[in-house]
Image 1 (spheres, helix red, strand yellow):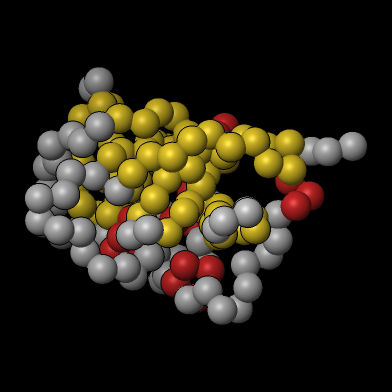
Image 2 (cartoon, rainbow, N blue to C red; image 1 turned 90 degrees about the vertical axis):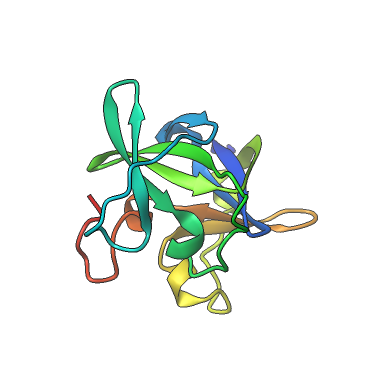
Length: 148
């Protein structure tokens, strides 16, 4: 019997990524952010989401990818973590995909460690590789301290 899971997909620097749809609170267009001077570099700022203050994480920087062009306006994928809601800044939103959980593989050693460490697994799709992120790992620093 197949164990199907739904994933919210998106792109960051042409990398096809996903998060379990049950961990996604909402997807919203670019929001103005308030900078936090003493925050880690991956924290782009804080957004006000209907009265809730949410930390915005620059997923490009978190995954050690090149910075986006200056005029690029990222999209917010607001996810639920153990520490509360966090916004992941992505380049483009994809579709919701329903995939067999048994077809998910472990991340291969060829994926850079900074990316591999935040993955739940990968799916080999017909034309590309889908990397499934684990939100709680994404918002954790390598030192083990939380971004919040």
